[in-house]
Amino acid sequence: MPEKPVTLTYRQTLQMRRNYVGRSCKLHFEVAPLKIVRASRQYLYDDTGNEFLDCINNVSHVGHCHPHVVSAGQTQMAMLTTCAGFLNDQMAEYAKRLISTLPDKLCVCFFVNSGSEANDLSLRLARSYTKREDVIVLENAYHGNLGNLIEISPLKFKKLNMQKKDWVHIAPCPDTYRGKYREGEVPNPSLSYSNEVKQIIEEVQDQGRGIAAFMCEPLMSASGIVTFPKNYLQNVYRHVRENGGVCLADEVQTGLGRTGENFWAFQSHDVVPDIVSIGKPIGNGHPMAVVITTKEIADTLVEFGSTFGGNPVSCAVGMAVLDVIQNEMLISSAKSVGKCLLDGFRAILPHHSMMGDVRGQGMIIGVELVMDKESKKPAKEAAEILCYRAKEQNIILANDGPGYNVIVLTPPLCFNCDNARRVIQVFDSILKSIETEAASVGLTSSGIDMNQSETGDVPITVISGTLDRIHQTTSDDDDGCSDEKRARYEEMD
Image (cartoon, rainbow, N blue to C red; front, side, top):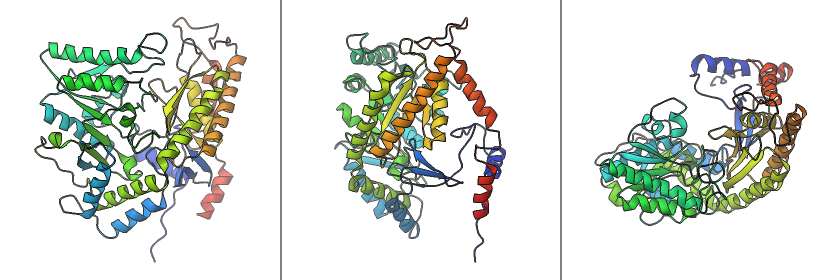
């Protein structure tokens, strides 16, 4: 008889992580992390049996532990798991099925293991085809954690105090809410933003260089969910191609029907990229990714190898994910549930002084919190408190964006309208309490304290005080669950 697996207590797991895992590997709810032991569909379960509504796991694209996906992986794993280099039906069939979802010119697949690896290969393909090095990316973009991807991810290299490489060119983020060109302040924000890219191309050419590629997400995720103004990508793609560059669509977080309108987010903009990269959502979290490009671009790459990219198990899992998307009509579901979320948040927006903007498409939604609607100063602390308080009501949210003040929802696509209504109700209640507490300590109706510091910062004592209380009431060795409750569950194990 095999021995029963060792079950660690919460404190043992936490201590071992601190001992053996890098400090820079962050946890959700760092102050009081959850120990998640199992999951199903849109729900997570901790080590004490609590059920949490998961609003952030976009990687579990069709739902945690979907039985069809699990079964496909188990069946193939019991038959064959091998490195690349052999003929296998799974890779050929999966490549054909993926390509059938894309415009005709995108017809060649390269299989890899992660979104970062896919974006790295996309850059390599672009440079191989154009024989150029320079790349244009958007302000606050994030494209992966490999070294050369950090170099083209302004959101990351700025935080790491890294100097921008001279071959990297940063165009303004086409954010019409708080960006350089705002809706209502300029006649045509889309044209103004796309002309910025055109100007960069001209400046690079004046230096005797050329643009290899323009890379962006069709809807920016880590930047705080930024949706592009109409015709922006059409104009940018035209400028890039007229000057010999290629257009790369990073669909790692936006593809496979997440935006609710089409299978791919770029299709909402009536453009066709030259290279598309997709990541782990295609495997419902299984470590797999794909780059899809044209035959002309693919043929310029003299050599490529991936030990495990496109192995039979990954391809079987990938095909199962495509089955679920089709059979459960998850694209139309993303559209209807996304509308439920957007309509719900927009309905309560006028009633909250700290709700600045609601944006997104399908099942990728952002709600921006601000100190007041006039200054739009990011309310990072309020966003952090809101996430912690939502956790207390068994809802998992995250705050993201350059100012960490955007509440982000990117749930599995099986998320439904009942889930959406529950999230909006809890969000509304929690934000109301935060605003009430802020008002009680002497804030003006605009949200600005009359006793501002000389630097102009807004000292929201209730918010910082609440964060202090979270830290004080939750010790380094506890997550807020009583010792008695934990003991009962540990005895059951």
